[in-house]
Length: 276
Length: 276
Image (tube, rainbow over all chains, first blue to last red; front, side, top):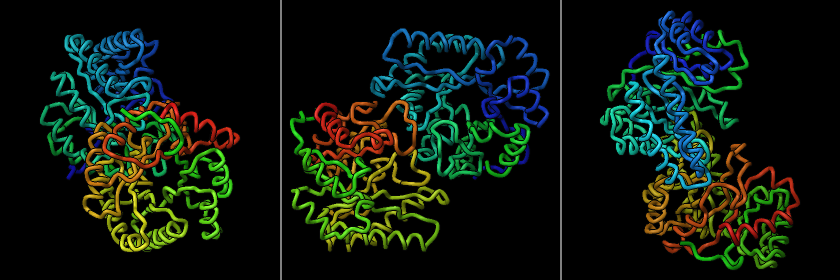
């Protein structure tokens, strides 16, 4: 059983959840709404002075939970694999600059090669950037993505695969991010949550809901409570193995991006109290 | 390694693949194209005299591989569960009438209850209709569907779950249908193919491809060779454990339904020879 959520002390919102807002609006409006956790997507950092972003975050007493996202390591093309390494090194710099303790990895896939090959390249990529991440004090969280993204976004599609990968890499700096949207359907989820906690690799917990029906492959995620995921049950599993981090709200939704984002943030808060 | 495909003797086409055609066109045109295997979707049987359909099939020397589809057992509503039973009994009658030796089950799911509960109801439903199916000489094939359908179309999302279910039901009349579209991403696929063959439960093999990117949840399946699925590898696994049935082409595609269906059938035949 999950603990009752009584306040917003563990609520984190991803900047992509309120995509119409830039970083300044996100920080100001989350803070005013009593939300102190923020996961920052790299699109809002483009052309920004990261020292100023850091000051903005500090001035509003915001806690950066993660930087989203690194990864996309696999490719049939060696030059693209190198470009991915370079981009992940840049992400580590950015994370360190804004005080993000962790980068979420959307690991990538290339439909032109097998999933096994892509997974090998993911491990290689992580191992190549890991020393730099460790020097910077930045952790890396492998986020398994739903199997519907296996063709192009991630060859890591179950928590078992992410756990296998972290076990292989075997570093306290490399763990996993559990997102209910990607993993709710998997009958092995509870046992794999136990396994990754036992490995001390459970780094992050993301929530939203699976709409029935779902109309778009990317941008039709539901607000918590709207879909068919038993979020409190999964939160109970995560808390049951000792996870004490933030509950991160990560919703991609054309529908919600079209509405007033202040009103949307209030709906997120209500859903957070009753449906997470 | 899969055997080389040299002719169309094991090619079966699903009537839904050429959706613009009714049953008469399907039978006549498949036959003229040298295709003798046909899996018949129930929509083309609506308002038809099934004795006449049977004669049409016999006159063209067509072999009915399956009737598609039964299933959709789970619901939070008991009346709907009973309606599903009734519909499956009707499907068994239809299968027997047209000489289909098997019904493919799209098992169903109800987002209003847990996947575990839906799976229990699937097993109950199959057990209820099984005696009638056995009397009619009709087998039932559980088709695991991709996890992206777990919210509304099937609570059976891996071959492992289908194998668990057939092991539990433990009848020579209940097996599984392996569709590469639904299962290609699963690292346990090869081992579960071995398992279901060992149980003598491997009843059917469906092919198409996973487009990268995929644009629609239902109707953007690719022609074999267009996407990222290694179909020959999976066919090799299936043949390697003794499967000798048809290779069934089941493609839902708004793009292909919009083109001339005779030309499309020729493209299917070419892809069948070189990409399956």
